[in-house]
Length: 361
Image (cartoon, rainbow, N blue to C red; front, side, top):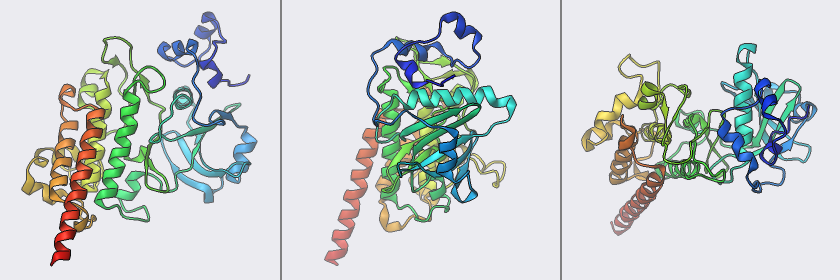
């Protein structure tokens, strides 16, 4: 049976009775209610291309180790070249049978959501393959990998402060777009925002990826959905963890954790550290608004002449508000975008003044 996921947006092909008996129909219902809406064009003409298993094998040289880019919870990611000559990243679902249904759900959510979205700070879905039991997602290829690799020395180029600020701003714009009802008409919470899901293109422009756990928020006055706690340890919103109530502010908390990674160069969770120093938020939360102590946690890999202390202080203050325990005390992503623009200007202006002073000397 043809997969036909994307066409489901335009016309419902199954009766309600069939939906109840088909274990592969994605829930919740909110997503399928969108099928009756007038479809909007995707960003690319081939944005919903359907590929065969043979095409996936050809693109990756039969999934050779030379083309392996990395591994994740979903499976392996390969670099591939399509018949058109376009270089892409191909995510291959490899899950044990016990997690097959969960993987299928994430696969369908990702196709459904990304095929509807259009923003420069979200990774582009080129197409997918649902050939028999095989599942693949095909994305635009991001030459500079993910943010965490660069912060931990795996990337080829170190990141100075202006570049880190630009990455933060790009990621913030992507999340703000999701939260603002985007092109789907309903706000979307990513639910698995983290530094490994921030990909960097040739110009180190940030693009958010991996929408398998994304959730559409309810319409009307409701501000949360009750959902099973899913995501990545270290980025969990403590309020969501304790109550099961997922809100847009859950993404804001995770964004705050990424800000702390950008500031310190440390991992969100580092099991190689002592019991009291494994969680980055707990480790630095109490010093983010202490100017003197703050200097000690700035990533030493950053060149001192790439940042001003004033921009660091402003950045740390924003991060501290994003990771507050109470969700209603956190800023919105739209507010984060505005503040980051100001921080970038402050840093740039400060460095310009420093350079001018040096020239005068």
